[in-house]
Image 1 (cartoon, rainbow, N blue to C red):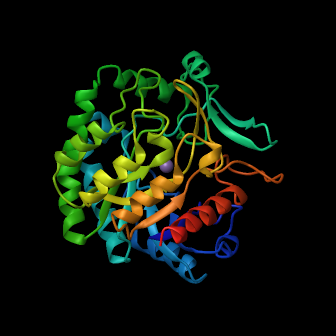
Image 2: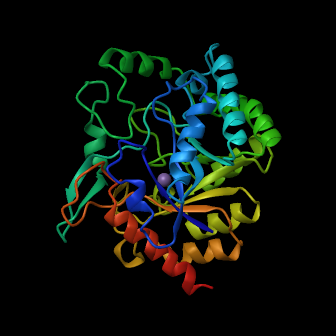
Length: 344
Ligand SMILES: [Mn+2]
């Protein structure tokens, strides 16, 4: 197992100099953020990113994410050109020595929360999801802007993309995912890049948009869409774990034994009531997930890929990108490494 840490590039207040001081963290999870979605990532930008990271004595272990253009998810004719560009990016990443790529297939919105700085009992701030509040939100009012969302949408373009999704069923989304995988995994196999889909967060439909990467059953279906070891999963405990039916240690064992887990996101969450949750500290006793049991499952499958702590709370007065401060994620990394060492 390699302990890794997400870094948002030069504009990230959590610098590589800080990350390299977290004991046990050797890998960086990053991306190129200034290439429009759907375009190919040029080689020089990839090499520049890699050099910056390696100059600090760290590895570029995972790309999170190479985003998938909405036209691919919608199955529009323009998808063929976008998929070709996606394959070019994979070839370029492979040539630069990157071999794990995370992505997701969530329509329009990435991760969604109702509040980004909810004060917990100990005075720290965390992201929370309150079902009642999200159900009342109007995503096309133009007033919502959450960090997981593509801020390039204007009110009008957001309405337009919602209209396009009005006729897309879950089965359509499955078909469009299959079409994408049938073309991309062939290239991934050829250049030996492990593709790792991130589950939907939260794992249920929001704002009437379909979501399919949500459960063990659906992940199994996903693995069979293109039955290749390069068609794998980013097993995110915090995304899948907000639904009690998702037994994370069981999923780690099951998909791990199939050789399909290429990247682990390990974080805890506290289910506050059905359909609502808080992002708690990583420690098992602070949330609803048994983190020791999860790490034990990774140990049992002989996992040798990258793992990272996931969203952290804001503690000790830190401000910054919600979920992506330094302190609480660093505590998470050290805690996960401690569990791992204890299981040796
Ligand atoms: Mn995650």
